[in-house]
Length: 360
Ligand code: GLY
Image 1 (tube, protein in one colour):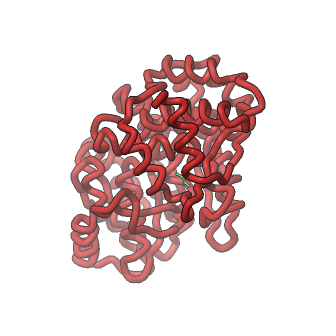
Image 2 (cartoon, helix red, strand yellow):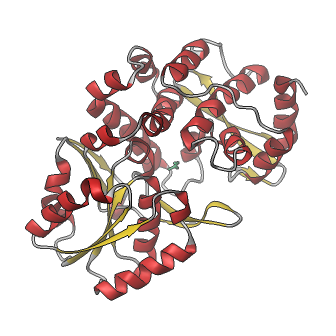
């Protein structure tokens, strides 16, 4: 088993990575929640038939009473209506303040279950068992939990760190190729922002079988980069912004496709390419070394490197971006491949340069 420890003082926790870990979830949770009697397992309709019985068996073998709360699959589940239903169901189950919530699934399940855990009874312990690549390398680590509002994604939320994160790479075997490559966009992002050697490793392993043959190394490296960023900036007021490389323009693509045409990873992939072109155009990037390699890598992984987007949507997304403050925005560029460079600039300047790139 590979283990990473996130040092956040009283909110510190471990991330364990091991094949077959689902069957040992009970013993691992017992170590971090010794007082808990009841565990509310939150999952979705896709994951439940695949993995819930194994997790329930393991938790019950460790002496816990379990309740299973299965919501619909998809982003639509991350809403106030489902959250309220979950709160009521947890009360019906008899959850108390010393009990805990277990998120079993992808990012939507983790965000919803985590926000329920952060708010029910003014906060109970929370365990992440992420089953998608995106959730394993990104959303299950770092404590961001949220639901969506009509005004936008993740607008009601909290920072609520898990007690432990249990990653079983074997759960990735049941993902379809599109969902796997969705997570690969975030994997590639880590190489771009922080680790040239890891980027080069990905360039020389540009397919799902090659990644799966090295999956523990890939998960560990991504989580280790996220660990260092979150330890420095848990509340996302500074360095954590580098995790949003490709996301500002990516959000425009998601918005343009009404969150249906493009997955998050697809939008981030094309967003990273656009951010690189913009960084080069602005002269913040030292050289174009790595840009062609990134484009080739993303293509090999089945991800888009360019997405058409109405100009008005780009303007709207830049205005709505969470990194925007008044007339300025912090854009995440790369100084060079493997090194992120947050750059505060006026939104007008971003749009002017984007306009030149888009030829409008
Ligand atoms: N997914 C970005 C972050 O955790 O800050």
